[in-house]
Picture 1 (cartoon, one colour):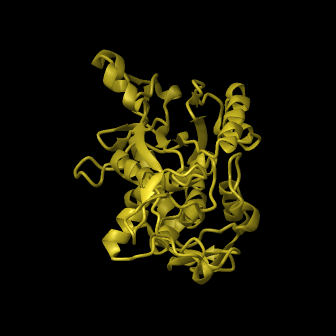
Picture 2: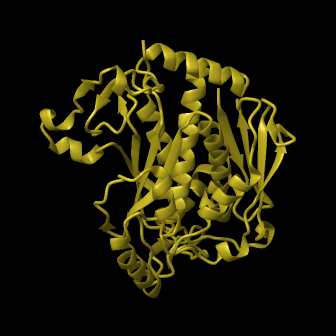
Length: 381
């Protein structure tokens, strides 16, 4: 089973991820991984830390001559801003952060011992894993694409109608990783206002995965359902407070006759390879029914709260004196929604790759491809 763990603190020596269960025989393009890491560092609203770090991956194990071996893959990203032992004590917990709950849970007196691991710096290790998983998925024509739908209440109604290749070009030309040029300048202005106000902004992220065949995921147990797993993966990302699949929240307001995606069948010349010939003309379900992919694009939306570290500090209580104080301030972003879109994309890529490897197995990419091709051939019978 595909699985990963991360280790490291925000100002420690490095961030590390170990990915297990990855098939042998796949060429790992280090530049592709580094490109994803650079994307995570970008976007209007990022803080001073991104000017210090120049994230790039070191592949420490599981690869020989750039080809995966089937053994655990260890990925390391060094922290240029390494100074954990010299950092000041933090006793003024920030509302909205792990500070207070963490120090009480672990019996600490210094919130530094919590915030260094709770920091979103940890997501660099996740993005590296997601990049590796995207390489695996590319062997089967599966593309995962994340972008910003809105920030600070300025939200796009534009649907992803272009091919993912076209959308990637539009997103990568955007300062906020958006595909709607009409709202981009308004959002940039709102981020600038938040900077002036010493405040922060959250937003909405959409991730779309194209190319999945029908039948990925499982209806038989609660923890095997693909939509449940994707929701869990997204909710694990720092500052994400809600997630929806397909039309999600909106579907609760519709009649059943409006909500569900009717099923059609194409004649042999029109057969859809990934669905066995069945097709939909809407995708309210977001590509998942009963916890199983139905061959339509997977659509997941994440809702990110404003970052809780504010120069305009909120009211708090000192951990030691119990006196009212202003919450502590750590160098941070004003808006990290564009960066979070890269992290959400990585987590969706990992979870889809995990479900994919469960379905098609194989210790090597060759074996997995044979299993996949046999399955596709049979669903077209």
